[in-house]
Amino acid sequence: MKAALFALVLAGPVAAQDFTDSEGGTLRWLDKLTSETGDVELSRGQAAQVGRLVVQLDSCHYPTDNPVADAEAHLTIVDQSVGKTIFSGWMLASSPALSALDHPRYDVWVLRCVIPEGAAVPDTSDAEGE
Image (cartoon, rainbow, N blue to C red; front, top):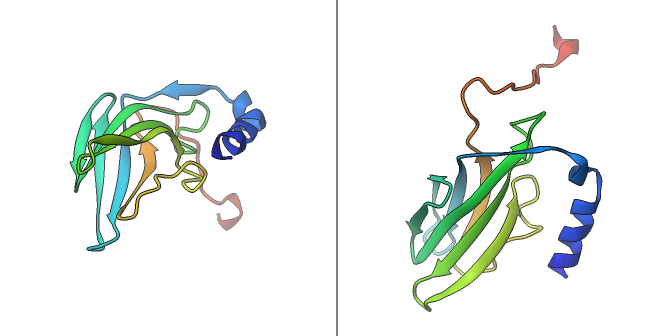
């Protein structure tokens, strides 16, 4: 079901956008048992320990014409307590529930990709308020 929904999203106007690969990304995690949260910035291919999970950022990219918009990251997440991969796929920063980690204790979601210095970032100021 999730795969079909994801395919429908990609078939829309988002699929027509050009994306730029990033060297890394920022993820946020939540331990639902202890309420502990944290952010972790990973380079492409790098992994980090988050409680019992090992989270690896395989890829991160963002819309070329709007770098601060919808980041997409491919993650591989392994639960060390059971010794198996519990998530491998794409997560969208703007729609974390679309392709979410299904774990009783932990949540992990994408915040943004790392944007290189000097990248063209559109002006988001309110023109009416000036």
